[in-house]
Length: 321
Image (cartoon, rainbow, N blue to C red; front, side, top):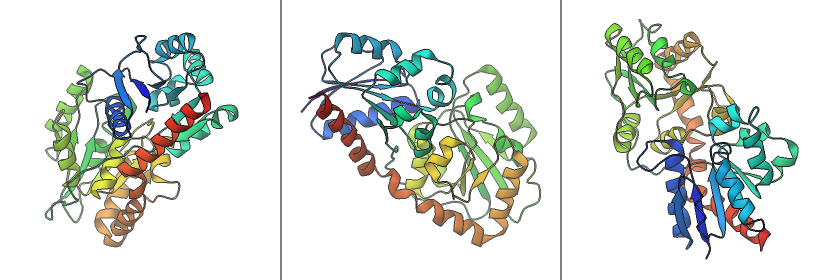
């Protein structure tokens, strides 16, 4: 078996999607018999393969590794911000992809964002989740959940804005939002909205198990992101059984499929409110959405992610050998 190094700019202890991905991949690859080191930057430690998360932020490690080991395999994984924000403008991000032997993206639409010559060495590895909790929403109210750190890329208050348009519904509606505020302005906005509307609760950062529990105890998970590399929270909701409604952006479409019935236009709280109102009022529409989401569940199984990752590693090692 090989010695593998996984590099992620997210430090240990952070509740960050990249960190979670790196830790999960390290676990899968250890199960396959590989020896794994997990670092924020490559420090020259000998390894047979480097897997770098984030093309721009890990660029120094990528270039340093390639300079010292021109014949050893290199895999670069594109996340949301580097794919949709950095790549068009960052020479470093583009260079990382050019010198990589394999590129990994986290959902199917991401591959289409790349130039043709890069698509040939690009593989899709859907993120997975393994939760013991199951969907069990309350009977006396209709609960929406939003899970993710409060930052601009997530458009975090779109669901809260939609709540203002949901005054008269067959069931009382409430919104629970979980995630650390990553700026004082985000914290102030969440607090202001709680004062203005008692149906809205911002719980701040919570342990992973608590976040999963809130997803399970909600009728819908709202993913309103402006950009997503492949939202792990969608995988978690799929394994739990809580249907998702999401902004129609490439990253969400790549996770949910082009024909998925639970999209709303980006930045459009009125369209989001109309969709929620329909799902509350029409049980058939809600069940149809839930069945459509359940059809995606197998994509996000841990065994599927491990097999896809193992294939990338095997091919990268085999090519260089």
